[in-house]
Image (cartoon, rainbow, N blue to C red):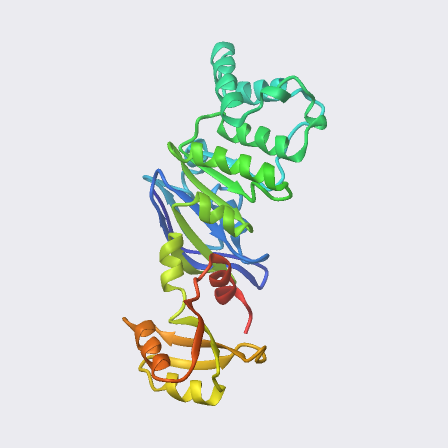
Length: 312
């Protein structure tokens, strides 16, 4: 549905987006992750036609952004990080104004506003001034604005930025509901939010895509090395290291802190290998060590994000 080819954006000599190739299928929720300055917002603004690329192309269906900007914008709803609302208007009046701006007649506008009030859970504030609303409600009003024209594609830039945990959950549930029928692309710093909401996750660093897949695929493929943690009693580190290092695919054996109450904690880094834990357990059984703890470290999206975006 959406195709980016060699997409780049420069601000003077600064490269914000660097030769990005990306295909986005319809009916999916795509999350963009990346540290500040990674290029997320710039990419979204090019995707919505607000910024012109320095080079490369954007196609949505059969339309080229360079030649058919208006046609593509009609297919999209866009919510920037801070919803651009008129604070002196009542919520209903604001949504009615947006509906009329998009060409809806009175009957159609009333019907659409009613749908969006239900979807975005605005019943309690519909007759309040926008200036009286919490940021969470303002984001919901902004989301209703972005959805007014019933767009095929919804683009959200940090939709939960600055919200409290309860508000984040509420916005997340709304996004998941909308995602049943729409293609949604949104950026976020909240890893748990992206993991819980998205069908596909893209991690951006220095304007490049450094990871692409669903959460489980990223956890399985982000690093070539995995870690097993163990706690042993009546064991000396040198003896443990010598025995464990003999096992194929073991990369490193490290002591995890000081020995406390005779308990030695070990971290073993290894490359993927079937039966690696079984081999280690057999080695331990052959010694006069007491095994207190033995488990494979589970990769989290946070750890993967740090591995891919931490500066060397």
